[in-house]
Amino acid sequence: MLLPLIYQFRYALNEEVELSGHILIIDSFPVPVCQPVRSHQAKIFRGYADIGYKATKQIYYYGFKVHAIVSDDGYLLDYVITKASIYDAKETIELIANARPKNLHQRLMRMGYLLWTPYRKNMKNARKYNNQYLMALRRKIESDFSLLSYYNAENNRASSLAGFQERLEVAILAYNIAYCLERSN
Image 1 (cartoon, rainbow, N blue to C red):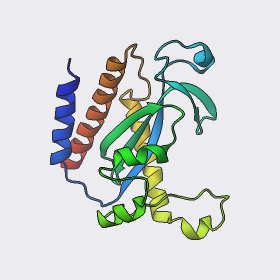
Image 2 (cartoon, rainbow, N blue to C red):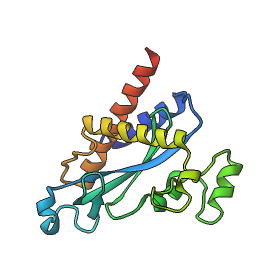
Image 3 (cartoon, rainbow, N blue to C red):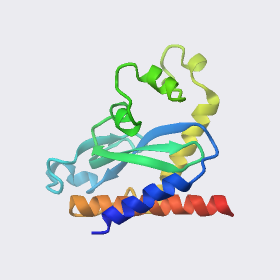
Image 4 (cartoon, helix red, strand yellow):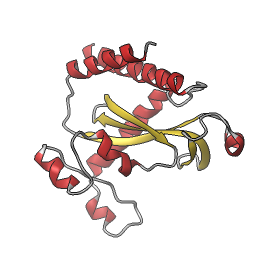
């Protein structure tokens, strides 16, 4: 029952916060709903969750993935929850208002954004193309996501979709309030 109120509070906070940077980063983090050994027999969230790969720990997990758009100084603006197997680029469109897959780069430039996707180290021209400043920002966002786990964003043990959404909203709201308190001191 609190979910609509939490949404309103979080979006009101988004309107009030002043971001120091001009770069927005889209990344994701996994939210497993059961232990990896139970992934193939899990019945919870059947039809909504599926099996994805957590590259940092090199394991497969059953659950969801949270795709988030974060400012370069760490404020989480918005997010989308998908099945664990959905990759980030597919959800970029939903996270950026009024953008479409075709001509995304040009549309974002007209809106004042620059779309940049890092190359992997083993890709051709990766060293020339990858911007070291942006790569460092991306690593910073990864550490901000690890802070989200402090608020139990990655350890959501709800048994219903509404409970799952509510717990995630509370974790993100708490994280954003901590961000605002830290910036005001």
